Amino acid sequence: MKFFTLATIGPFTVTGACYTASSGTDVTAVTYFSTSEDHASYDVIGYSGVGEFDVSSGNIQIGVATTGSLGAPSQVSHEPTFLQSPDGSVDAYLYDSASVYHGSAGGASAPACNWSGYYVTY
Image 1 (cartoon, rainbow, N blue to C red):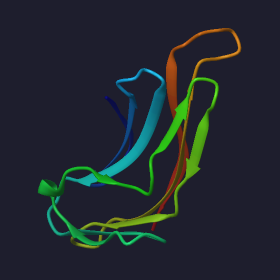
Image 2 (image 1 turned 90 degrees about the horizontal axis):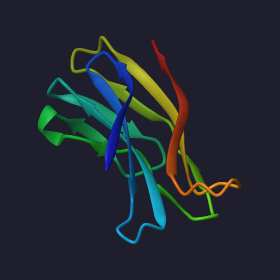
Image 3 (image 1 turned 90 degrees about the vertical axis):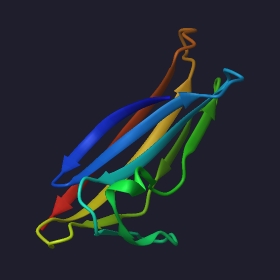
Image 4 (image 1 turned 45 degrees about the vertical axis):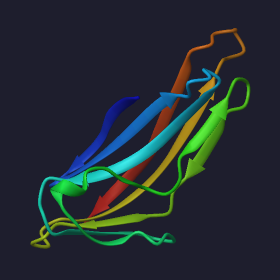
């Protein structure tokens, strides 16, 4: 599994993970967030994930992963995620999507994961 830092917003890090299943035919992209400060809070709109989280919480997944296979790409857009630092100095909304493909019209079999999105702070 390969991890990519997608954004750093105050004490928060948004990370993407890309991996190929042991079968070698499925590729999955997952988006996570984490914090460097205890007692931060989050709310993934539309999902049951909400509450306080700490450094020890590690990576918390945003929404669902997306999995594609050879010749069958896949894409997912996540509901907005709200992050707030413990002292309230950083409030951020994240909007992201992830996509995967395995193979191409030219015959390459290398998998690829892509993320797009933006964040708003106030």
